[in-house]
Every structure is written in structure tokens, then in C-alpha cells.
Image (tube, rainbow, N blue to C red):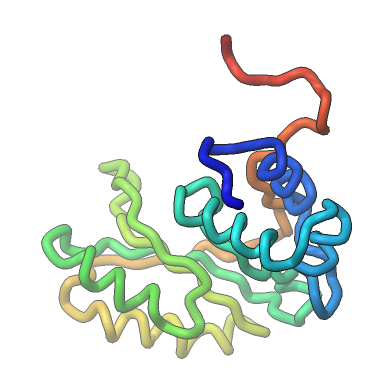
Length: 172
């Protein structure tokens, strides 16, 4: 049975069990279920419900691009006409080589860019056709562009709940 509250004790246990990643095995949801004394269908249903409520944005792989040989990781930045940026951004984000794409406010006069799209390649030369394809897609709606190349790996993590029984960090 699904919880009627936003986060019951089982949901919180499931969040804690998955916040560092899913188990690396052929049936990760079954492994989680065994750990939490649930059945696999309930784990999947609860994760889906949390995703539908907005508690979880998505469940997906987060590869280490460097270990995969993708050393040219560049955040492409684009100054795109505001009247067209939403529609064009949807197309850029749908390109198979763009891992994420989003709209950000400009910080004029020094930062005119409003569309960001991350590309990954083995070398910067390999990334050039990807960047050219984005430029072609944006066409005359794009006034300027640049690429911010990654120089090191930053550890990215989302919100982490404290261990069960630890003091809450929530404001009173």
C-alpha cells in the first residue's frame, strides 16, 4: 500500500538507501527490496510515486566521463535571442551528444550567454563537430558563443538526508 503522507518512514529509508546510488548489480531494485524487507514491486512503486510527487527528479546513471575516456567535457554557452531560446533550447537538449541543457539569466555586460549545453568527447577536436551542429541548429538566433572546458572533476551530489536517528538540520 502506498503512503498517504509525503514521506513515511519507508520512503525515508528508501531515500537513505539510494542517495549514494543504486546497487551495481543486475537487479538493483530487488537488492534494495531485500535490504529494506520489502518486495521489489513496492520499491519500484514507491520510487515512481516519489518521482510523480517531485521528491525525485529522475533515476539515471551518472557516468564518470573521464574513466570512459571522454576527456573533452565542455559547457557550451550561447547568446540566443530571448524570443526563440525556449524552442531552440528544447532542440539542443534533445541532441544525443548533449548531456544537459538549460536556460540561465545573462549577467550583462560581462556575461551575455543565456543557453548552456554540456558536450562530451574524447578530444576537443572530436567535440568540434558537436559544437558546430549546435551552432547550425541555433542559426541566426545566436549572437555569440563560447566553450568552458572542464579542467578537473568536481564531485556532484544532491541533498543527503542524515543517517536514521541523527539530528535533523531542518529549521524549526
